[in-house]
Structures are given as structure tokens and as C-alpha cells.
Image 1 (tube, helix red, strand yellow):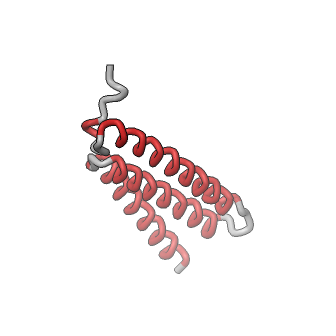
Image 2: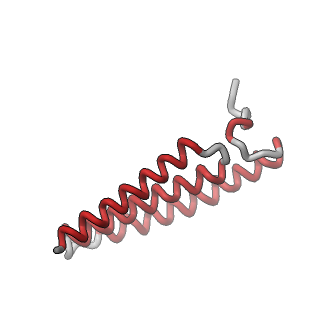
Image 3: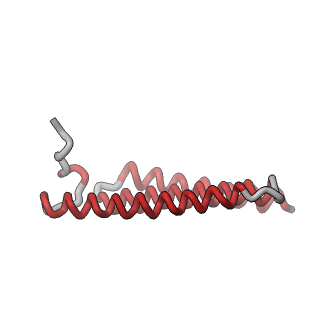
Length: 104
């Protein structure tokens, strides 16, 4: 029965990750892309916690890594939103196709 729960959690994590990849590839709005990246981070967190729970019950490394990932995701969100706000002030749009700041 334990393997069934493990595979269920892994499938949910895979579906969330694929939703995130789809969001990154299809969104034109920079905020939507950031949200899709956050979904991918959360899928990785679920995966790490599931592997820790079902494979190594005594080790806590599977719980420590998601804490670091959550911290990095919060920092990435803060920096990303600051960049989006700065770009919006210059070009009055958050559409990725209109951002030509880094083009030659």
C-alpha cells in the first residue's frame, strides 16, 4: 500500500511540473511565467519530500532541501517582480515579446 501512495505523489509532482513547463513555454506575460516557475519549484519540493518519506525515513535531508528551495523561490520572486516593475515603468507593458531591453 505504501508504494501506491509513493507513486501517486510522484505522479502528482510530475503533473505539477509539466503544468509549470507548459506555463513557461506558452505564457507571454512575465508574471505568468514567474508563477509557472513557482509551480515547478513546488513540484520539486513535493518530489523531494516524497522521496525522503518513502525511501529514507530517518534522514532529514529531504526536508532540509525544500526549505532551501522555498527560500530561493522567495528570493527569485522578489527579484523577478522588482525587474518586472522596473521594465513596466520603462515600456508600460509586462508582455515578454515587447521587452527588447537586452537585444542588440
